[in-house]
Image 1 (cartoon, rainbow over the protein chains, first blue to last red):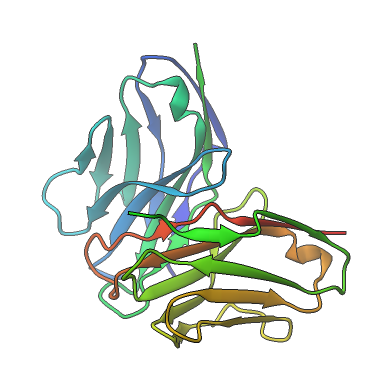
Image 2: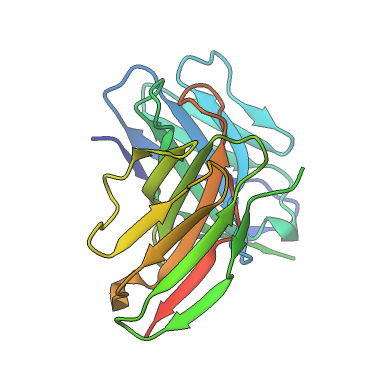
Length: 117
Length: 116
């Protein structure tokens, strides 16, 4: 069965520094997609970045980058130059049954990031 | 574009009472999802619709939960009767059809249910 593991319940980072949030996954499918979402205290899940299993390069979106290590089955999120507004819960997710009709995402338990001034 | 709308944002009920949540997806998104997020956990899919048909409801507790999307746009999730363990945030999301590529789910702000 597919599974997402986030081992860091909480992290602190100083404003303007970089931070890495860990995510490991388990799947036997050769094709899969990995997502990171941010959930501020307001509750809405905000999409940050996507990485496909066959993508040759690590995904980047502004200050967000994904450190994709396929052999280690890890997809860590790197946030550069942290801002106070980055304080939130961060979830790693995997699409189950890639290419099928369901587009179902399986989520990890999340990492709570606190950015300190 | 307007986001995914959900209401109510907060609801407090007694156990064994009923509750209903409403969701309006992004215009044009044929696929709609209801996720349950219990405190301290990641969201878990309850049901997925494509237009007005159910694609996946394998994790929906059908003895007490029901959902419908009659006209392929808005959706309602109902719980009757509610149990204490149903206390959670109910997130609605929508997307284009298909489970490949960067087909991103866009989420609403959620409906927080407290069952006393």
